[in-house]
Length: 539
Image (cartoon, rainbow, N blue to C red):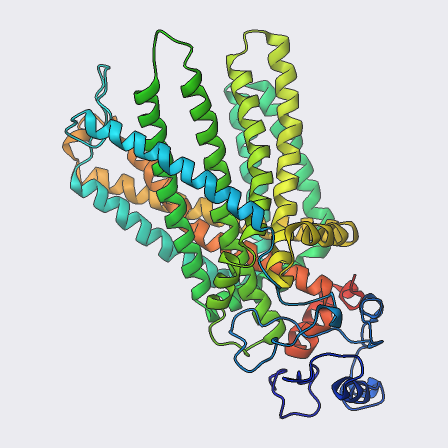
């Protein structure tokens, strides 16, 4: 397919952008544009197309020069070496445009101050460790159980579990690409079986309240299978498309793995810091107000920074998928430009959205503490109800944020305008997006469960063959199995993060500008149009 930015072609969809004259209304390039895109000319002749061009009303109101076509998308993955965007004017269109300046800079500065305070507390914690003169890097235990000690071979099996888990995850991604429809059906039915299995377990254990809740949820989920069957073809196309892009650009998996490593390392630093600060500032003769304030800050900082890491990964991946959507093969290595945007012009927006999510998680944390420390049954029940409401709201807000940050990556706008645009998308297509996420989410959930179980089985086989000294009585078997299970799920999360970001970003691109897919991948556009006819309408 011809590169839409190749100025040597006279019938390109996006016209060449002038280097010196700019985008003034009176300049000649706009005259040539209007002549090129007359409906009777060669680009979109009705007799040559099996479908009618989508209406352009959403774009017309935003064009100051009266054009009926959308402005060109930003070059997500490459440096503007040929002057493509150096003279781009925001008036040329609000639909798709490159970022201008650093958005939400105040949030980035605030996060950096928060990170500095966290590092300061981490230094205090490390000084506490060094002053305790320990034989192993931790605080000396004062109880009768000094801790758990694994031998070197056990850590080797943990590493081997990570390698095997990632290998199985990649294999699962290949299966999702080859048999997407069968996998969606299988995992949906498998999820229903798992939920009914949990229901039966709770009934056997006489935990009737939880059993009734899971029974209702399982029945509703089984009904959803029949209600949502008509949506499976579209989810199939989405899963297959995202899997194809992931295989074509392995850098997407690299982004997921690096994000996982950074997130894991920060989690360990948080745990060590909490233990060290507790050892340094705890006092049995005072109210420990200093310690309590430090703990609240550490929890808040952990939530905020964890969300920043997660959203940087998502915005980077969203930029890659948006590049492929709008430019197809026009950019060979889009990850560099996408990562640069996520860490520069869009970083403040990421910190802003992550701050809101961190505040919600902090409220959930306080409710959890209040419920655990309450001795009043009525108060505990009331807090439990509030927890359910807050958790549901937090889940919806996190889902909304995911789509909002796809908009941040695609359009380069600040967080609030992207959130408003996402809200418009949710009001128009929110149900379809939620159903689509749920169908593909089942594939990812069952994939993570499968990888985790296989890695835990590997750990169990290792214990049975080697019979290490620390597990002579079998007491450490559940610990090793659980560690291998968590490692396997973590490895699959690197894959699931890529798939989730790709699905959300592709959905937003389709809803906002379906005509771009018709230009870059007409065959895929036809497949999507057959499974989702509303695509020709736009929003």
